[in-house]
Image: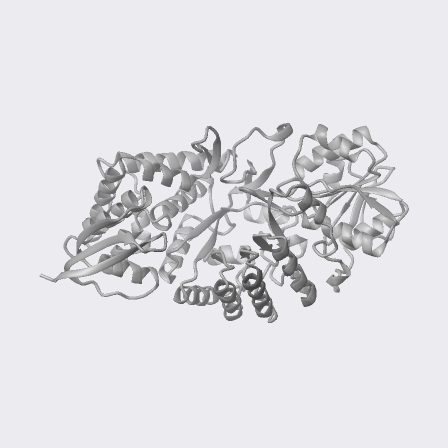
Length: 632
């Protein structure tokens, strides 16, 4: 009986750690197909010093590593050290970070004996059963004893996914949970595999543009019951397109039933499908009705036609996005929209147009901007694609936001390859795009200035484009030192990022340590906590007044000043120290803002309005707006 070790370092998000689902699938499949023939050591999934992990692998005859962007360097370092002390241990690498064109990877890392491409369960078993004869095994690559590179094309995917026993139901995870009862876990849950889309930046499990195969419904229901029994609070659904299949409505009902029955899981993260807007909305609404939902992800990425073509998303309907957003707004379901910075075919004007389009469609809740990273097997990473679009990249550290900033274990820091320039976007344009994205998140979706900006758009006819560009103007109006300081800080951050420095900002956490904060969160926190917050709003008034004068837009008398006052009061009183307050206004600004936020068309009414915030009796606060005297 051969002794096997499975290694796959998982991610940790704040206090929660992902269960090593991929390792569970491999072990479960081998034990089901070859019962009693292999002994598995306890899986390695936590990051520890290499000198502490090596003894745990001392009896391993075969060591199989599952690798992705968050663990590739640590995995390589451990594999190299293991091969040094145990030359006879067979070392196998699999997972999305193994390149399909693997010769360079293998020659750079000669301690790896063989790599697996694509879906791994069947191939892994064949390697174990091969007695060293790999000539008939599909989907593998290696360097033979003569130094010759050999590669085999991938075989057919597994259609009957239930041939892989569930690691949740067969007891694989029980020792892990028992060994660490205080740890909070994230359960990874697959209901299907495959994705019919072929986005050039994506490498969803190395299975893009493929038929979707399903796990059985009875298995999935039993797994959800297991999550509830183990009190797993958060489930990450690993489907590429939740809502793409008609049965996803049934799965949403099943999850909701389990939640109501047991109180667990508390939340489920899903990636909604593209184009099937009605079904995606209905599936998510059923999760929302059971309080299982997190904000819904609306993956738009870009509206620039050349960028949509370059990333092969021109078959994904903008109308479907609009329909989904409208439905979510109508049901008061929180959403956020993803947009990418650095796409081939895009530029500063394209990103600005995309932001404006999304806001015009009614996305006032949240925009999340992501950098474009190159994954080994995505089309965007291939040499021909890089050359065609003139991609320029840097290696940037892989860091988890909001996590403690500690020295990297063993000096190993993971990194990702990030696009900073293309043949349509010089690096200076990329830097401007990053600054624009941060300003949008700080001023608008960070709510710091959203009320006046939204009211100026509605009642002054000033476009979102004009409003955002006003804060990027060079020079800014005289006597705006806070705005100038923030903009210079953002420009410096963008410059540093384009040179490969971290995306996040080291920030004291108030407990004697430091955490990594996203740049926009760092700026928001500094402004909100600053005693100069009133001065910030005074400077914003100068910028917006100058914009009104330059564009000759007209506003009702006093609306800008009162909108700024309302926004300032909400932050200085409501955010800093939540407590009751009252504010007299000359317009029904609060109700107008609330209606605009929900995509409605309000009527601005002059008069004497009293706005008050008071406890709601449920531990929160409610806002009331009352007409004291009619317009003058």
